Image 1 (cartoon, one colour):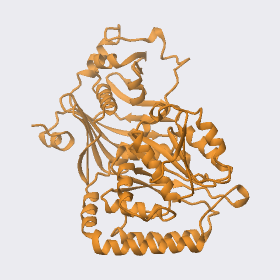
Image 2 (spheres, helix red, strand yellow; image 1 turned 180 degrees about the vertical axis):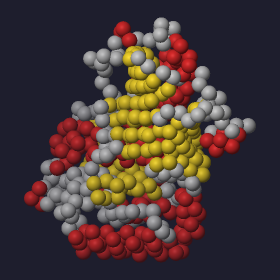
Image 3 (cartoon, rainbow, N blue to C red; image 1 turned 90 degrees about the horizontal axis):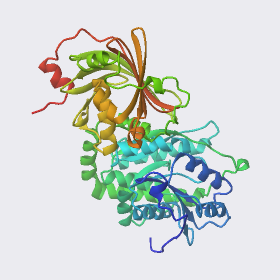
Length: 490
């Protein structure tokens, strides 16, 4: 930006208040009384937050400014005059980059965009940091019909501008941008600083090779009597959009189409397993489970070690199992989803080769967990997943649980257990914050030497539970099975 904005903050680095890579950016111009409530709602779901005051004159930013002086993680940038939504977003993006953030979720200041979906969108961005995560709006019944028809026209034109599908809704501004790519694109463009920003940003980032990812998100529509405010000028801004599309189509035909065709081919090779990884990230970002006060299982008299009488034989039997195959069902519950996600497949456990999960529902894919990390195979090919320290720690813990390496588990968890005839139950309580953030508390249940259920719980509303059927008849894995279900090693 040519003019530096005035910055108001509590003086605490944003990374100290929440994520060190992803920030929420809220451009605001005369947003009215809803702004303060929107900021509070966002802070309840994510920190840090940057509010960009785009030359507001209605006094709506006053309360947010006051709060920013004492609220860690909240920053207000004040622009000297109204420059337009696009210019305000870019000012926030540049400020975020200067503070070391890599991604920004942009949302409107009027309360129409869903703060409850922030974690899901951030999780998708963490899973695919090179992508543009776009919102696909789920409209309420009271949305004006003319808005829907106008969107259909705009979405159709954008399909031409990116040579096919990829951007489900070009006008919905609830999205996560890779900030460096966004700023780089607009440093070389003069347009897109006002209501044309959302469309031009999505199209031009696709031209630059940034793959689009679309996620559904609910929209709230407020009538004027409810405080709803729109600064869209029907004639002026529609003419601006017509001129923008004209420029983009000419630029596509003259310059962009060869590179865009190459980019689109590259996007097709990206693994569809990114959604799986997004859920793992969302799981890791959920609120921690409070201490298990009053839990009868987690009690001093139930604390175990490898030599605890009555348990040592079971631990040895579980750890020394031969190659094993069993059917399983998996249920994932997250606070940002109304319904649980149900999955099913087969699990294969091999001491030297690791763990292989062959998912058959809702889609076919193989997820391999071994000492080298996570590898996903599906119809799109093979892809190695994140190797960050936190994810490596979670991977190691899951391997230790399914291999039942008690000595390794005892390094990471306090272990508690109880028996009832042939049935037994274990609770693994993390010893470190890193393990607590990665996988949370683990519960393992079984009968004799057979695992029946594993639960990874981060909070009362965020957990993954895996129910395991009795194993198939034991037999060593064939070379064909090892090549199909495990990582090939030289």
